[in-house]
Structures are given as structure tokens and as C-alpha cells.
Image 1 (cartoon, rainbow, N blue to C red):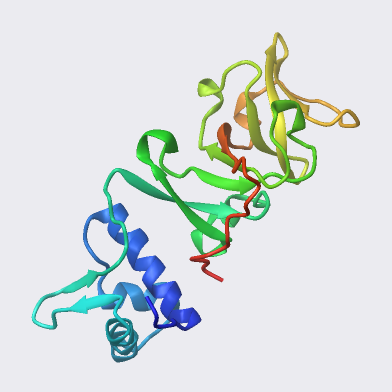
Image 2: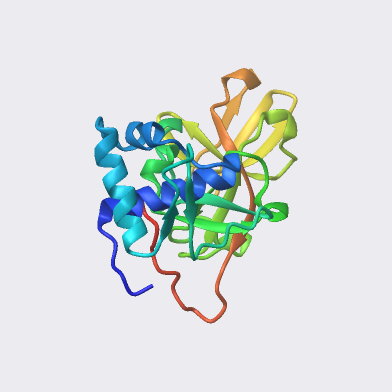
Amino acid sequence: MPATLTELEQKILDYMVRYLRTNTYQPSIREIGEQFGIKSTKTVSEHLQALADKGFLERDPSRSRGVKILGVDLNPETITIPCFRELPPDRNGLLTDRAEMFLSIDRRLAGAKGCFFVRAKGGVLAAEGITEGDFVLVEPSVPGDVGEGNIVVARVNGRTDFFRFKRNGLGIILQPLTADGQSTVLEDPTKLNLVGRVTAFYRRLDGVAIPVSGTTH
């Protein structure tokens, strides 16, 4: 579309797309306002009208939530997943408004609700064939669902990182993926601060970078 959106208009449009894919209906004006800290419903309505004037929406003032998004693939077979530039330091860091961008993939490839992508850094995951810039998919898990040798994301000693998950008679062992790291043994599985396990990764074989778009910053 030729029209250019302001940063806030783009954020509102992205939010509406994600909301619709998740709930199958549009957010209310009040919900949009709460999402972006806009107290005036009139101001929200003005932003929606601007999106309509630029050809991104159709509005029906006679209906509650009477908005139709134009020019966006809303296929129910896909899911939109937040992508982070680096591993979030804690679970609060997984809030979607902190994501670098969003990627849409087939629901059959996405894993459990709450999964997220993170960009691979350096050679930490090199032994798994994952190189810098790859998009690593992390799926929320509990220790009982994690298999022997799986790669997990966990928070240990105040640091969130990738580890190899092992078990022995002493409990759970988290092995660092770099040679200079030391393993952590947890006798009590309930003490494990597990963010999730790595289930897949995505790479463009032609080396073309995926542009950052649809950010919430």
C-alpha cells in the first residue's frame, strides 16, 4: 500500500492483527486504548480512522468492533509468534511489547501456546548446526516433557541461557553448550527455572536477511 503509517498506527494495526488471529474477533476501542496507554476512546477512534483513510481498515460505526482489516493474510492455519533479538532475561521479558518483530508460521510447526523465536548469537548453538542469525523456536515446557539431551532455555544463577538437559541419580543436570562452562546439578526438579525447550530453527539458505517489521517498540 502506498500510504505510510506512523509508528503508533503500525503498532495498533499489528496489535489488531495479532488479537484477531488469537480471538477470531477484533479488540474493542477500549482494549486498544488500554494496550497503548491511551485514555481517550476518541483518540483511539481517530487512529482507527487514520488507518481506514490510508486503506488498511474498513470501519462500520453501526457495529461494535465493526472493523475489517484489509490487505493482511488472516489465515486461521497460521500463528503469529514474537521474535526477540536475544534471550529475555526473565519471563517478564517475554511480553510481546518487548519483541523485536513477529513471524507468522503454520500452526502445525509452531508448538505450544506461548512459544517464541529468538535470534541465535555467536557459536553457542553451533554444535546443533545453528549459526548466528538463525531463528530459534522455543516452546514452553515442564521438566517432565523434556527429553534426555534436549536443548533448553533456563535461568541459572541469575542468567538465562541455552543448556543441554540431562538426568542422573542426583537429579537434573544442565550442561552449558560452551566448553568453558560448568554444569549445574539440581536435586529438586521444582527448583528448575525452565523457560522452555528448543524445538526447531529457521534459516534462509540464500543468506538474505529477514527485515525487521511489525515491531512493537
